[in-house]
Image 1 (tube, one colour):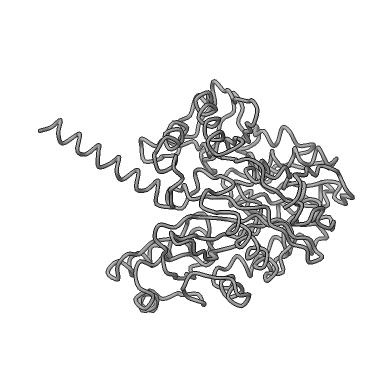
Image 2 (cartoon, rainbow, N blue to C red):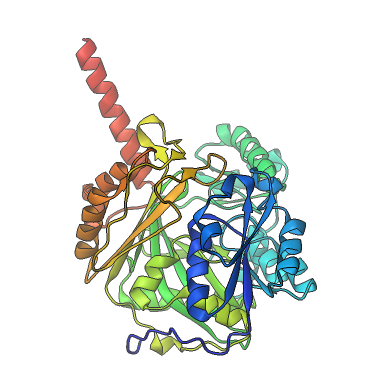
Length: 474
């Protein structure tokens, strides 16, 4: 792949004023990219977010409702009214909330508002996991053995699972973020877990259609960042290894993955590009795979939005993915070809959440007291926190994304250890120390990890604690 290039020029951006239909650090991140491109910004906020950093940084702000997301950040008509009233000609949905809502994307375009993302029909096709699987199968992309149509009935689902062989994984067709997802290891527990996952999916997404696939043991979660324009040009920007997870929620992400050599990287990247083309995709997106212990890989889903962990790709490629999104949404062609992309160094991200690991990762929002964000060479922290800010209880617990870039993995990890040791967020509990501890675990140090790494670690620690308690009571 060619020389390392940084693309920061403004190009011919047609967007003049952008409304950010989101909150928190991603809204702040988008505002900062817009400043560099000369795009005016409009923030929307709930009453709980009136003092939020994205509201303070935007050129304009509009209150769109009460604290619950269903009364504010999920209210399409209020966001569209705010867009039209402010004179904004484009909307960036960020991630979460309405970012993968096809109805919202279609409504934006119907109102002559540029939606920074793919068309609604593409969101539908790739957001429905059954439809996405069928699209990939037709394109010759390897997928995990599983159902090709949505499953609504637990008994019928059990018959299919029996045929696939256990373990299987049940997933919400319209889901994401680990909601509506259960691993089933025996036929005796299938009905209960299917009904539990289905109810959870209905509550989270308003859709209780499920699909079932063979669960791959000892798998790594590998995703490829892609960019695509409106003219059929598609490239990938390498992979992110997101195997450090707890209950399907990512905790640490890195790029590149130690599990891939250059040959496998090129092969999987090429398949990711083929998958995006098969979907007719444009803008930024992510093709997600699982990689088994024999280096076989399988498509699992496509995220039709910017990812939380996009920063690690930015660090190793020198690209600004938000700027690229805005340029592509303006109708520009991709400014670089595949041979222009090279991964330089190793990047790591730790998600710092407002939660208490010692109490089962219970959320811990509150008012920020002492506050120190470390800096230095190869250090990046994306956050919407500031001293005196009260972190609301009703939204995501993500407090900060701490990223480091090193010449190699060892250096990136060493920098991360230093940053986490120096980081201060008083007033709330965080998982900072837990994350710091993960970096010293032998499996992480060696890079021999899978998606069960954190779960297995917690089980071991629980067992050790119970044994110690038993010995003290003996």
